[in-house]
Amino acid sequence: MKEYDDSKRTLVTGGAGFLGSHLIERLLERGDEVLCVDNFFTGTKRNIVKLYDHPRFEFVRHDITFRCMWRQTRSGILRVRFSYPLSA
Image (cartoon, rainbow, N blue to C red):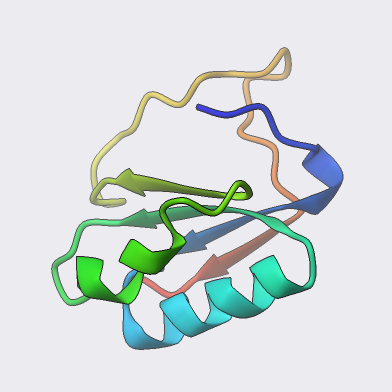
């Protein structure tokens, strides 16, 4: 996982969907660092493939209904400024 500035990091679950991918584009335009989590159940890789090389974008393929072992900070919490839960 990349090192991010906590003050500008945003988590978008369901980010490979139509709404999520457009939201991510806007967040990147305003300068946010975005962590996108999606399992491609309803979203598609096609919606986010153009963002893969963006320096402030990271994608994790994961189903949020299952436990995920995130690299922990000292507090044990994945630190983000905002979270947009667009996964259903």
